[in-house]
Length: 118
Image (spheres, rainbow, N blue to C red):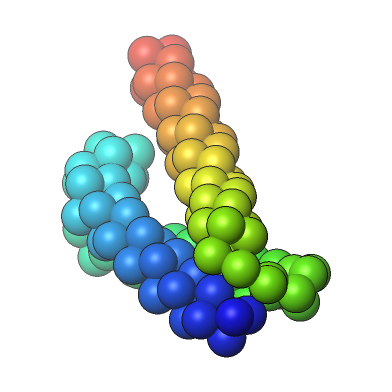
């Protein structure tokens, strides 16, 4: 039963991670471009690095958490375990997203106040 759980877990978290990462990549470009005052080449470079780091962090966490699973003996335990593990990944993704947005907001405000002083 654990093998089925692992396959479902990897497929679900892979889909969530890749779909969310691509959404952040596409929609977040404008914020980075604004921070870098229109430098498109640097924006694209930073955006790609952020996407790769995001994938590595999330998929690495997924791989590490499988080691902590107990033996799954029935469908009820399978659903409970998958729900808990996928929910944790989603909470971690949300937390990382809000931290990143906070950093971008902070940098943007700091840059805006510096530009007004000049």
